[in-house]
Image: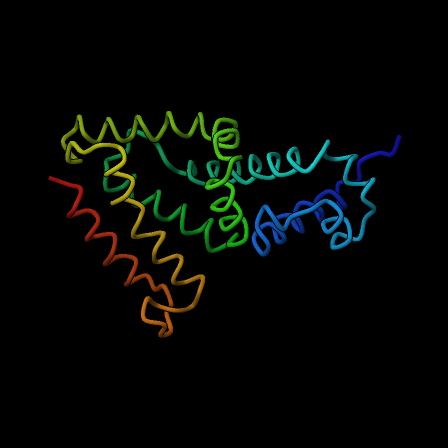
Length: 196
């Protein structure tokens, strides 16, 4: 039996993410992945039992990395403004550093793999964020809105800005660069919408 080569495994994972983002799940195949990774198809089956196993493991790994980054220097007991600011910083840092991972996560979170990947990677972070949300309402630092409204208002604007940054274009097609001034202005508007 052949042994795992961690360097090859990392190359395979990176190529898989690139192919998924470029071609989607329907265009993704083990033969294409092997060819683009410079390995044999048999090598892929050392790391993964099949295509579904590979996609699930990649999704879970991205989820763990993302949610680990979200937890850096963050506590659910922080004052709401400080905690939300930290979430924005952490999310933006991850999205700007790993745009392909974010695009792959987005793709997988809108696929049939969604529930499995979220179940395996989100549970601890979900508890932390739920506690942050409830604490902020209890301390009257956050309007008593539903979780869905909170997430839409709290993070939707940030992800729109990050999408513009990633594309390098604004909504009208002109050039766009995400600056600290733009981020701060948007953050302040989000705070006004969510705080009493």
